[in-house]
Image 1 (tube, rainbow, N blue to C red):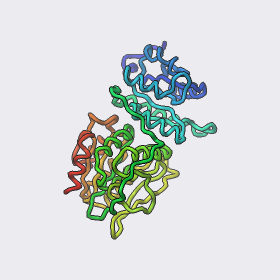
Image 2 (spheres, helix red, strand yellow):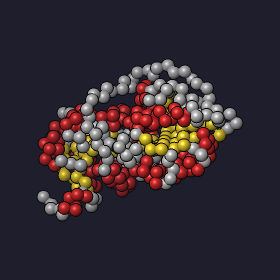
Image 3 (cartoon, rainbow, N blue to C red):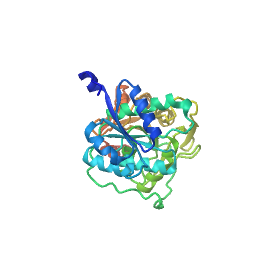
Image 4 (cartoon, helix red, strand yellow):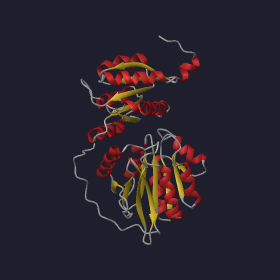
Length: 360
């Protein structure tokens, strides 16, 4: 086995690859070993074969395929998060079924997911490698929690409960903009589950590909008291509604004589295809001014920091999730460093503060 200095041992991220595709195992091992800060400590074709490797290698991060023989990735994830919690990145297909499985994995404690590459992706190998490196680096410093309770799966074939269509949000009401990245789907869910059906309109920019965003909106609509939907260009904001930014586009708002409308601007051609938190926040600053509320949740990177500062300059009230409850604290920390945050709160107290502001 290769010997490392104590410093190298400390900084090297040890990765275990579990995938039933020999092609994916070879690709991931090759890419991981190319990175000077990472080491692939083992590969396994299924979770059963991986169990001994997991005990022997004690990896910092696992990449885990969802669909595998002998034991699927979700069952294995549930088991290891109860017995030996570790940062897990799921490998998922960009399909509706793959999206729902990936979101279920995040419920069970996975840190993030990576879409499986297309068969003809040879020209995009470098971009794929950069995504893998970024997500492994983030997972390597993420806060991993032990799964201590059963997490019932959401019945995605169920009909959402009937919800009243509330009045359009006037310009004298609050407009809430939420930004999140790594760990954000569960943070957003917890926030929304704590809010009443008549809360101010919420606009959410979450760093995820488009197919996953559709599944996220459907899942949240089944669980929450508010209406949760994908935002559409030109629709008027209403109380009791949550508007999710499409993964391929930026969500912004414009002010009208009566209230506010959504604007969807496709961001094709940009290096970063995720919906921009900064763009959402800047638009709320311009349209709503002091009636805006910005919320920066768990996430990697600094998206949202500049936008939060713009909102604060316009008189808005901004909240950051605290380090203790964040899976990754980079986004909230960057917004605080940019002097764009009024108050730092644990996740479970953000909804209460939001409703307090709504009454002010």
